[in-house]
Image 1 (cartoon, rainbow, N blue to C red):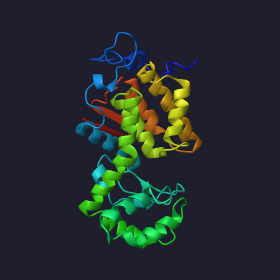
Image 2 (image 1 turned 60 degrees about the vertical axis):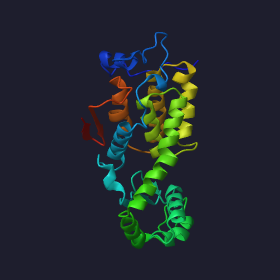
Image 3 (image 1 turned 120 degrees about the vertical axis):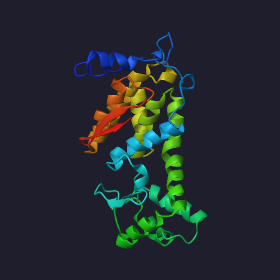
Image 4 (image 1 turned 90 degrees about the vertical axis):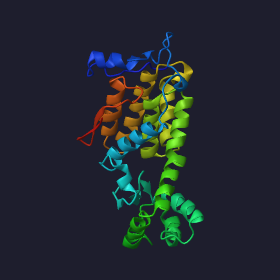
Length: 275
């Protein structure tokens, strides 16, 4: 039998736990009287609504870049010693995990002769490793220079949406999840990447433990278990889990299934707020 969800009754105030199941303005899980979650169509606009999408980028940036100003990250690039080579741009594309290579390939196809095109052979060579061979300071400078161009900023936006944002939102909707669930999927997709292991592996393990709302389960309970699975993955990788513990779990236990503002959260001990 699948679990119904734990929701940390021992450490979360009772009123906060109850709020997970009765969201103000929505009744029982989105206004249904049968105890099942409402589909996203029964709710306000999803995470892809402009204001919600902007909020999502700001929350992700707080974890990825320690800043709410996600638009200031187009020219970001450094090796953060995580075994993935250079991490760069608005969503943390990396030279070691293929997505940075694909970004530059697609950008070069539409903009031949750009300042990064000459590094494609080196990017192909280091793909799948942490190596800087053929890259180094010259590549870092080229990335920063190219990020000053509107076309490359648009390319980063497009690749973020194509690889991470759109698939996460689409799959969350299929699972019957509202705005918070769509964001939880998106952030997991960003950090862990698609695939198994990765986002799809985390989702598979969560679905083995609990029914999604589309399967008749309760949304808050399923999301709590999904976050359990994600936290275990992060711990196994030796990563800080605060983006789950003091951000997404906080939104969930506040019963904020629509990810409405104002919001307050912490990542890596730093506090953030959006009014």
